[in-house]
Image 1: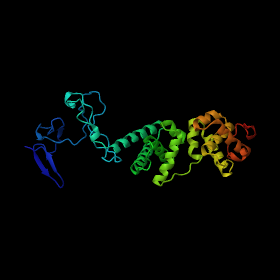
Image 2: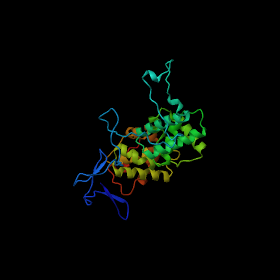
Image 3: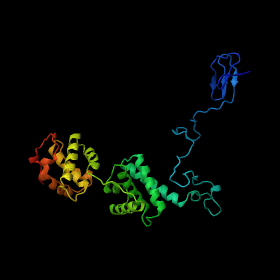
Image 4: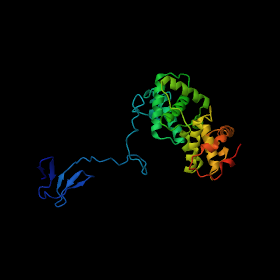
Length: 316
């Protein structure tokens, strides 16, 4: 018979004939066995490890988990409601052919609308490679706006797109209206209207965008080296400090600065290449470039290595 010795702490199960033997646990049978004499010291031992078996009909499944989705605190029910699939047998329908069990009863219309908006936000974010923290902030913004009901008459997709634009700016990784518009089904004008209404409804604000917010991303997408990126950032900042580009958007100024820096280096880029990445027209880049060209000699950093001298830069 097995014996139990009591030490200073918890009781220890051991073999009475071989107290120093290390017991072997049979996980399938739930027994603890002495390896010396084969005595079953303990039975029906509870396995507290993870459950890695699968109980589905798919033998090649890679997910043996038997739990549902993670809890969503943004939904009223915590997203713990039961989702009933469509039945195929006769017991799933009444005598009139209507389904007996419906999901409409287990989820409110508000939760359904928010769930659809959250899916749309995730889809848009994935298209432009935005991280999870921006998706979470966008979801929170949308929930606040939806519960306030201050934007009645506006589509949820437009509100979601505007919330995504606000979240990007609040997290310090701003995207342009054109970039948000490209991954959504809403026009740029409608997103802009919702953006202003949301800021007013939530009584919040966003930091002003600067040329530096877009410079690294634009230069990276264009495949420009670090030296050109540093020069373009310096040119744009000096142009703003010298008040050479009054009334121009930071995006157009950044595009013009990249064009000037690239033309002075060995990695030259055309206006069309830069315009496609920055989302601005060629004529917009030319207009901003003409404003900064007369002071080009004062705009470059002192340690910049010119491949094309300043006096040889295109005048447009």
